[in-house]
Image 1: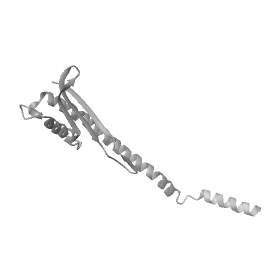
Image 2: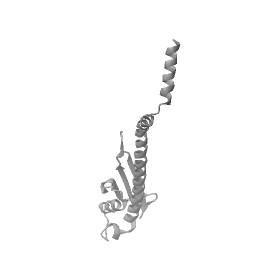
Image 3: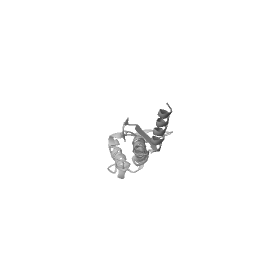
Image 4: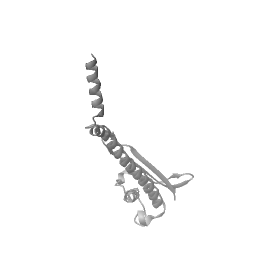
Length: 143
């Protein structure tokens, strides 16, 4: 019985000192977590960038629709489609003009103004997750 206990103790001590393959096993366990964190960080940064681009583009498009008929329209009149195209062109994030809605005469507080809103569904590319949050932005600028 003592010989068996001694052999088992020796075997356990030998296995405890053996480090061959331990780093590979630890790396295999932590790699998926690191990849998810890396992709998540990149995609969260892209989400914030596109949200900022939406806010900027609706603000500038509402302002342009209120004041700058040469830039947003044909010089004399302005249409919602022209303001949508302008908003999409300055977004700089590949947001289509169909994501923007324009109302050229709406109430901005106590005065009439131009309101531009955006709703864009952004698919995130994170392995093992299927996420597509809808980003929104809205701005109203008095005439």
